[in-house]
Length: 163
Image (cartoon, rainbow, N blue to C red; front, side, top):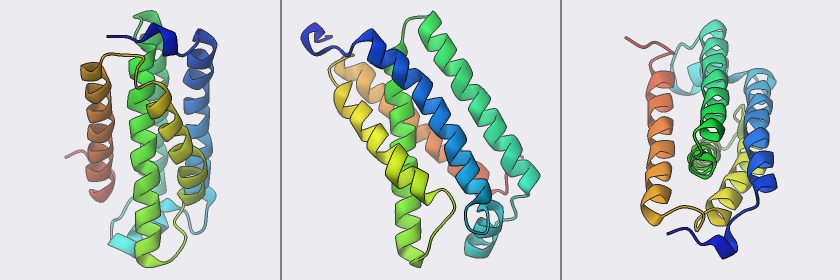
């Protein structure tokens, strides 16, 4: 049941629906230009051949999907659920980048945006919107976000190949 007393304002919802995709562009830029760049980093660290072209194409598709998701969420009236899903995605990404960097004791492209922008933003949204939707919808949105990260991880470890 929605807790109307603690329901986030429409202005906050709209702001976050714009902010999360914009921070994705910042994250892509850091992964591309940060350090040796993510394709070279994942090759050195895990032996995965992810070409720069595949990296950019994958992120382009990801950005388009996020943008379409935000538009559909607004159009079909599920913006809070979309925000919770995106918050789960960026929070897990932040944790993944931090754990990987700690495990190898070095910077990995995307670390700063993940740890200093996405993780705090994701946690803020997850906490602020916890009572904005039913408990079931909240956990479904988180599960979708985690599932998206699993798919992205598999895709990345396959060098950006689908088949």
